[in-house]
Length: 156
Image 1 (cartoon, one colour):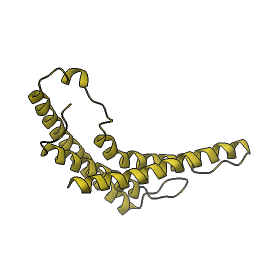
Image 2 (tube, rainbow, N blue to C red; image 1 turned 30 degrees about the vertical axis):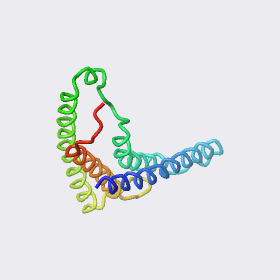
Image 3 (tube, rainbow, N blue to C red; image 1 turned 45 degrees about the horizontal axis):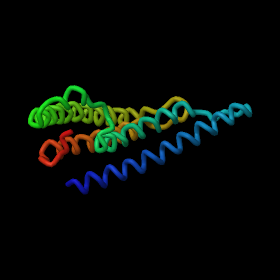
């Protein structure tokens, strides 16, 4: 299971990284184009779509590397058993929260697909981005579930 989660996280990270580089290129091209009097139409929308994809696909890496908010000042003072219990409660809460978010994202994506909602300038459908976000959240939930039932999870 861990190998699958690591593979999913790696693939997501590579895709997110490529989209981030694309964001830099599009933004740079738009800035240069504006200076030349020929801005790129739809840049703002493209940045929104790409930013959402980068965010959604980066969730699992951020969690895996523990590069998210963590209240270490408080929890580092507690004994190891209390820290383990706090990690368990935290992961359980994360599973409930992110599962709910994932379900809502899927429902929203299905609705956007059904009504064929598209962006104003580029006329790009919204639903693929929402489904990508839902996938990113689902992988995060799988990581949290794995950590919940893995006694070897690091307790700092």
